[in-house]
Image (cartoon, rainbow, N blue to C red; front, top):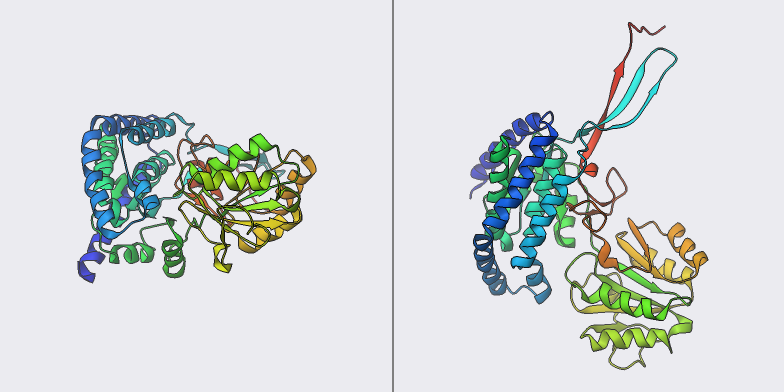
Amino acid sequence: MDKGDVTALMQGLGAAARAAAAELAFAPPEARRKALEAAADAVWARRAEIVAANALDMDYGRDKGLTAAMLDRLMLDEPRIQGIVAGLRAVAAQKDPVGEVITEWDMPTGLHIRRVRTPIGVVGVIYESRPNVTADAGALCLKSGNAVILRGGSESFHSSTAIHACMVDGLRAAGLPEAAIQLMPTRDRAAVAAMLRAVEFIDVIVPRGGKGLVGLVQAEARVPVFAHLEGICHIYLDRAADAEKARRVVLNAKTRRTGICGAAECLLIHRDLVGGLGAQVVADLVAAGVEVRAGEGLHHLPGVVAAQPDDFGREFLDRIIAAAVVDDVDGAIAHIRRYGSSHTEAILTEDDAAADRFFTRLDSAILMRNASTQFADGGEFGMGAEIGIATGKLHARGPVGAEQLTTFKYLVTGDGAVRS
């Protein structure tokens, strides 16, 4: 597409989204719920079409040379489609955030003031290979009364198109504007640039993908951004860790799904554990086919390879993990502050004081104790789904669900009040 075509496309999508957002802002909660339930029915009824579309994307991804982990992010089968359906139903069943009174108070002047949740307006979501984001982002934006313009990755084009059609089925069934959930109908990368400049149509951009995508969005966007940066997640194995818990949690955090942002990318081991539990945890990882890139003090362990300086602070999204020895919880905190991405960190310990210090002195969006970093997910937080994990500090942070996709306004009432 030439520049004029992309500009015209963006203007058409943007104008339609603005009109749809105006209607969604006062649409009854029952209509939004009905649309999501109907979309879930459509996804399940059309699952064979979605799997067939995904097969085209998988072929495209293989030809493009995607890694095994990236292909896993892209792949849809019936169990994963069942997960998409469950996510849509979970969002549908949630309490509606629009119109919720956050707080209210009276003033001596006779004013009654309410702070009330209201939709942001139009959300732009730019994502890479995970086609389920089409459903998750569409559902959360609709639940929060926002219109959304989706731009999926070129790898997931066919899958996203098939899922989007089901979302439109849901809108149609509920009598809501079909432009409430729109999918950019082109693989042309110029469409991304057009979204980033569309300040007259889009109120916020949510990028969901790797460092390259997020960096591009942050550098070029004129629209405000909810940053979802890298998931450089750390696990600290404290001296007071329970051996059984630690072995189970570390293995799950790295190997359950290596291509998601909640996968552990660095293991920090208390110096006192190197010859015992630390060695056992490393052996577990090696036995599971994980390449352990070990720092000083761990080179003697069987099966490890020597870490390079750039292995720390790196998101592998593969069966690879960096490992380092630290003196204590403060050493772990210092390492994470230096190399982390403010996403998710976990401490494995039975020592309350160590856990409290870890929680208090680190400022990542999610901090965990004795739990796998793979739980860094809106669905696991009871949000039904998420549009991403925001690693910034303004407005939304951590899993971004329907509530985080609202802003607020003040409703002020008086009885003839005048200011002196």
